[in-house]
Length: 445
Picture (cartoon, rainbow, N blue to C red):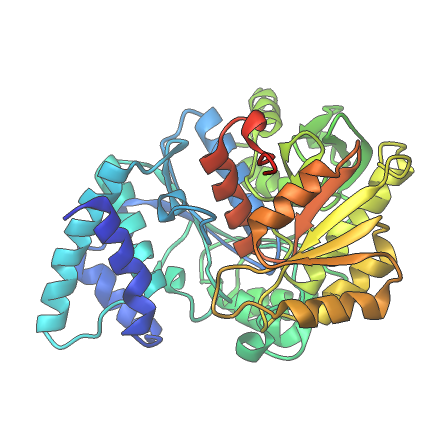
């Protein structure tokens, strides 16, 4: 089998499998030989920020000389992105090898009368198999959806659990209140496993704390006043920690998201629990300083930023970040902004658009189509923007034509692209295909 055939098989899985119960994932892991039991697992759930927390943890663990496996989702361009070992994305050859190993096990399962693993289960099984085969010590696992029923929750004894910010997303599956959503996220908590979570300032905090108390586990809430943002400049955000433990270190992140210090603080507190001795904080500072998380307020070209904000909570944080950027005197109000947007139909995109039009001033709003069956219609997106803004709203049927227009008309303005991780992935893929900046703008006939 070739690599592309393996990828196509995985992408086809949703067409012939249904959602399996958690017990099925445990059976799947058992057939694989329970590779997860050889790993020190850090399990991360939440609405927004969990991928960032995982990436920060991965970087700092490697700075401690540890061998680390990182499992995140979704991928932007290739499924290999989901499986990272010691900072290196799984190669096509490695991906194919572990796919074939897992596929052999799946055939045995089916012969024994068990259901085929779902898309996410299969990739999770591949990840822990690859991690165990590589002999990594720590595995940082990001939940896919929710927590309680997530495939990653089949891991029985993580070294710690982390819950990032709680917000509105996937309400049809997780609940119609923040408390209900928090209860699903708190489903990853287990007896004997300490918890770290970030203060939300609403009823979800109580849900998480009550669950931790019921299980009798230690629960550390990182308060909103645990850090102080010092400034945003040169496309970085700097902050300090209030706790004397961190002394007077100035931490810097390669990102201008106003929410990223809270993600970094969660990761730092986990590291403090695992390696609390003195003399390690400078290594952690350098590790965080070098992290670049693709598709998360990422500068992909000069003054062109791609952000994976794809729900109302994330869009509100995106808007807050640009407001903070302007307050620091580093915004682009003088030159202006251009905004590219797309979304899937089952998201609350009208509320997302209303937030953007109210809080993110742009010279022009551009909508385009994402290549997914759930894509929101262009006419509907345009109508929604025009409902909330009097600024020009342009529609392009393909990303390529929208992208060409943006770059041809940038004129010193900043460009921000958001609304869907599918859009972020399409942009990343377009960048890889075109290569150097000189190839970006297609010559007109």
